[in-house]
Image 1: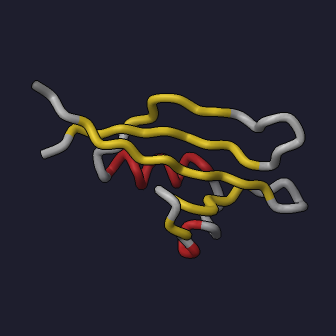
Image 2: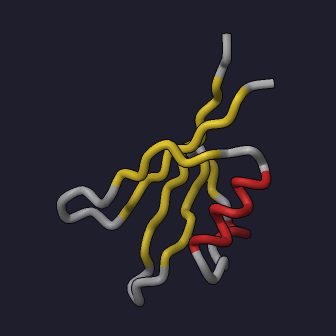
Length: 74
């Protein structure tokens, strides 16, 4: 039976509209906040075996998006 582990990426937007990763599984990731493109962040996670399952957009009046990823447990 396959077993999965999940990862939640919390994204936020600066006042200038720049997308930044604010945390990964509730741990702040300061080094990733300077990534110029969101695709670079996804590519880094893909290299670690993560696959996007769903993207949850902003809630009404919110400024945060969430991306849920999974990868097979070893």
